[in-house]
Image 1 (cartoon, rainbow, N blue to C red):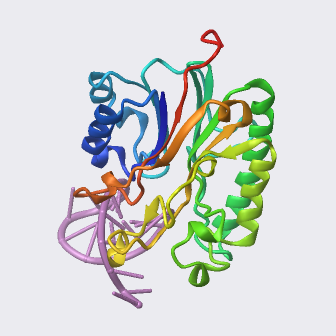
Image 2 (cartoon, helix red, strand yellow; image 1 turned 90 degrees about the horizontal axis):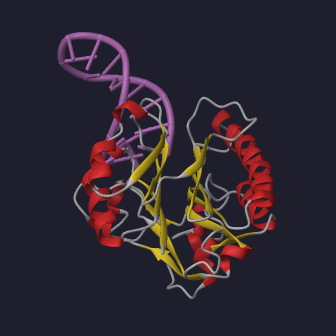
Length: 261
DNA sequence: ATGTCTCCTAAGAGGAGA
């Protein structure tokens, strides 16, 4: 069973890519970010025709997250409970006994921006939310665009990016605090090639030159990590015509020992 | 290297966000 995440930078523009990817990879769940549309404009019919259900938290023009799943997501929760935010960045649901949360973390813009202060506040709220979720759900998966490159090896040019937004010490610290809750970066559970990234700028031929950052992550609880068998980034959709600037990331899991969980 | 893409408003380009 495969679970994946993808910042599609507009679901309406990227729908053909998403449908092709679902058909090829048949994930149990695909966590989407940056829908850039209201739920009323979400392509439910096309997703359902592909054999999938959709739980959507949308808004006009910006942000927006969804859970695309082979079985209906149960106990769907939108947003971070207790954290008032007009921006639709979080949706949670349960599939096959796994609590799955799709997250689109704030970008931050620059270290001096008000958006950066919001990013750190938002991360503090996410931290407390995930702490509570881990107490309730043995098997938890939190996947999406974190807008943080956790280590220098996740950056094509760590010298140029040192201290910049997405790579700053404060951002890396809050990401590390998520791991300290008992979450594991599924990408690092297995040997990976060097210079694997998940996002490349649209400009300057960044993808062809592999000038990228690994800012999309699929974090899993330690219990879930026990049955994680593979993980990675699928670069193929980034090479298509009219691509998202992000590539899908994924992890694979062996069958649950407790099918009723 | 102010480089690209997507959205919006509002009626043609320009701004926001990434």
